Length: 262
Image (tube, rainbow, N blue to C red; front, side, top):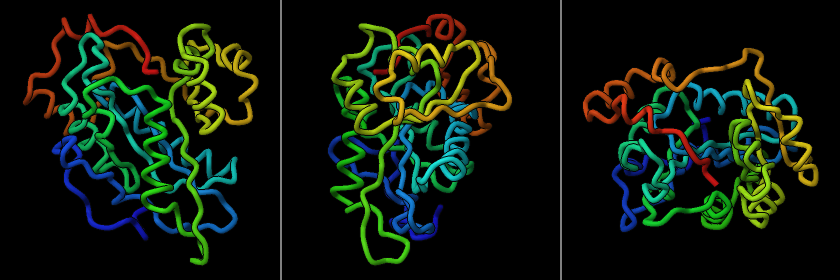
């Protein structure tokens, strides 16, 4: 998706601060290739501590799903690592997690980017506000996406991309603020990758009012990977970065159970 992208690569996301932040759009498709479709931007929020091939695979699955099963055309994808204010046990520092996401995305995708905006915030940012940030940057600041014929501009649909465990927490009373659920699922929608061990039907039953905005991506091959084995699914550059900076220990891994990003 590099054709008609926004321009040369900006400053590395891992080098950005609140003072020099610029929204990364160098891989965003600025003009649609397919007529009569709605431009779609996929956003995955999370710890990414560390990012794995499984995270990257979600984007490719969502792209395929959108092309085959919807009237959307994916024009870009973003990884948005949570800030240090999330304070999850075993969480590597934000600048390390952003850099690992960069390393993972650089050579495995032509359309995936890392936005450090959430990661560099001094306070925790709810997912609803993160999606608002993408809506503002892409549809307000950049003016949306140029149509295939070059005659009009369209607002991109911003959509959350997540695993089925997230939708499980959304359907559990008291875990998410009701106004945030209504904002995320009502205004943006979600693509949810089915995961082994999650009762997706039960979760969706509790979110029925937004069912038209929730797309479930069925995995042909089920992933049931324990936390102790997840490092086998790391990109080589990420493994080298972890070793170089001594980011994770067995004790960190044992502690890293916990809350979901909201």
